[in-house]
Image (cartoon, rainbow, N blue to C red; front, side, top):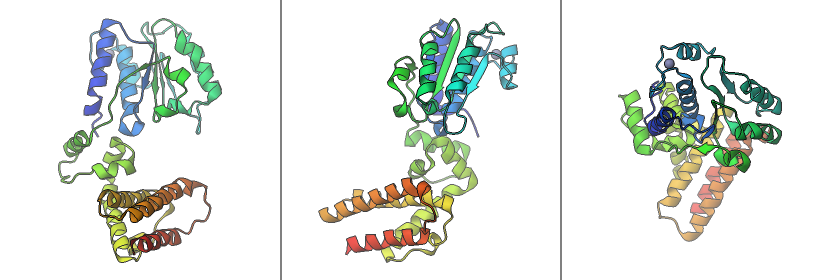
Length: 305
Ligand SMILES: [Zn+2]
């Protein structure tokens, strides 16, 4: 899959220009989920900052630094990601300690922190001082899947890059470049996939086509009042996506403008219940999926009559 994502173009250009002009901030926040290419963008920026060619718009690929980056062994590049669910304070302290060392290749020292919202309070506090005074020629790149979850003290110390998530039009155009045989609009899959790269993976795996069948099975189930066979034999992993699909079907109907006010209200309640069940599935042991799905169909039937 091409890593050349069109919606990252402006952010890359902006970064390259700042580097040429010597006006790079010490710390930058990349508010773009991994599923939309946030990690790829961070890796690009790190590689460009380290590249010895000071006028390049993209990493030259030939210099010693680029070779070390490509080999995954650049001594001045530090990657930090969660150990389990959290980025822990010891990890941050160790990173900050590494950044006080002199750059071994004579250029930038770069830290890329992935999913920085996973820093717990102690870890975030340990990073604050380095964010404020990172030292000469140091660049901290903070990628975030959920920028809204970040502490204001972290956000205020970073330059926030303006990065737009791909628009549905950009996404469809890009998907067609990757998969010329694709002739349908898959924008509706995006909330299920969570991001463009993940959606492209779904297309590659044939999972997008499976999702379409499952969505259609919900529409048939609700119309007939009987759970479609395709929905009667689900695996635990599928259920999350299947409930998101049901939520979409209900939402589509609410937006159709064809419901009575009371039905509209009840439909919204049912949709909220589906979403809540989806969030709580992880905590529920021994869920009877079949009974759960049947209960939605019954509830739908009741409110439509
Ligand atoms: Zn280079």
